[in-house]
Image (cartoon, one colour):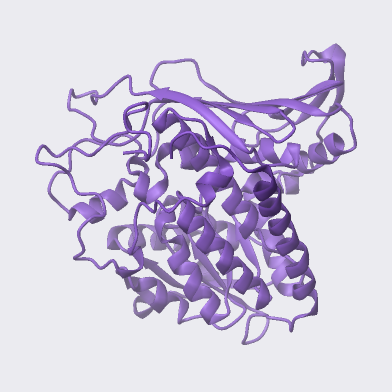
Length: 463
């Protein structure tokens, strides 16, 4: 990307347009014909992506309190994941599981077959790696389906622009879209957002977000063992590869970034960052070949000069800090006490979170404390009662901000949000044409290694 200056007029126009899209299409949704699940009161659901996230999302869906809902189709690339998910869900939700063998689909085209089992107004769940998000969303719009899609949504500019355009088409059909940024459905954070908006801690001028934990997921990988195919193995290890997931940065840090930007009611305009690869061997002494840094630190800057500092780390044995904070001209807030949206949220006079300075501490009813369940109850309520509900734009923007910090760290350059959005660098073009026999978009070299970011050396792209 290189050092890029932002044209303030074009940035304002971008933000203005996305706001106009939101407002205008909300009105369209209010006026458009009601789109509701066919075949009576039961909403049918198809699960596309049957890993841990998909299984969790399906469980949350079948736990909603707004009337009957059942799972009728499942799709994945890997049979073992589909069967494991099916068995787990069947034990918990026997009466709501209606997924016989003929509605269990495998392969890169399985998403089509699963969505073909639904009727207009039903719900498709997308919980595959993000690289396939726009592909699946395209078909859902064609089928007239409401959607829940897991975060993050994109890893580069072209797919971000593509999803924003698809969002317009989805709104025009009055379809509902939920995005798995569950912190937005934390009742404590919702009240905190209101209090900050009312000026309880003054104007926000700095925020801090931390996810400093040990290695998790598939962020650190050893050499491809030769089976399954390189493509399928990389999809299994998606956290390790920028093309598939945006790497550990996009996947791990998006929640604390998104919730801080929400408190600010703004997205940053630029970022500069640093990071490094400190430990490059597994505990068994084998070299890691993934594309991630072990630590990141990003300074995001907003249009008014306010800052968001994001520190991320995936290192065993270091002090773990996983929380987020907002600082204003009159006081400060604990946004999340622990994790992405851990209770309680609270506000304080001054800049020290001492008990003597406490202004407010969240109190949330027991049945509202699970934000994962809240987001599904909110989505299904919107589907059943034809309420405006479309989280696509903010999901894309949060993903873009994640990619902004990642790319700034990987290139060693200050990068603007505007430049990233309009970049032509797409890391997995043609992903909609992948088959089980396709080569990987990122083949290994003769030594089984993959290109890694080299800040200050490779500056026009990440690798």
